[in-house]
Image 1 (tube, rainbow, N blue to C red):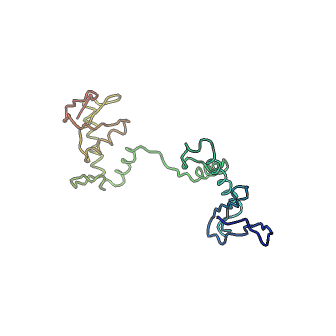
Image 2: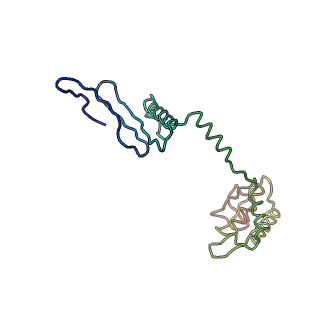
Image 3: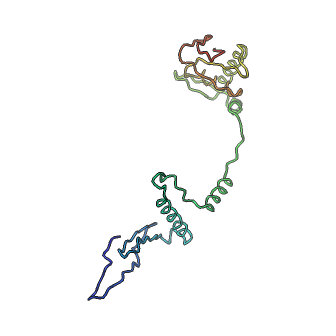
Amino acid sequence: MSFDYDLEFAGHRAHAHNLTQGLVDDLSVTAYDRSDGRGLRIDLVGNPELYRPEELAAHHRRFLALLREFTAPNAQQRAVGLIDLATEEERAELLAESRANRVKYHESTLPELVAAQVARTPTATAVLDRDGRAVTYRDLDLASNRLARLLIAEGAGPDRIVALAASRSADMVAALLWARPYAAAPARCRTGCRPGVCTRSSCTTCV
């Protein structure tokens, strides 16, 4: 707020005091410059129906921490989003709360989850191909197993590189399901490959 604080009444100087800035709906930060050489005065005012005194005190500490970061020697090299306003106590409280509310889940692999779904709903649609063909969980599992037997017969195994020439289709999903149990990372051949032949020097088997 900018006012003329140098007030005189018939030669008598007056000292202005800000009693209130009016009703505050939520939280208000107001800066005053009284031009008396004392610098800025900053008031932090909160609605008492929304903030307890300890909450306002915590906001006050965070605001002071923000001002200190702005006046730090390397302030111009730091992004505002990187400023950490949480205290050590608040950080510890948040970590404890997150651990207490952590959702417990059963650690399962993707093939295990698919196998469980096959057992529950074998006839449900698992993949809808781009040509409109619906593939059930049972059919997807059978296709994945057929591909696994074919690749093993062709020499696929541990420490072997296998390139799969497949379009974006249900066949590619079956290939991904086959690769997961073996911790494999299937690579899609884009050019120069056809079933049975791979021109990439890194491929040892291509189907």
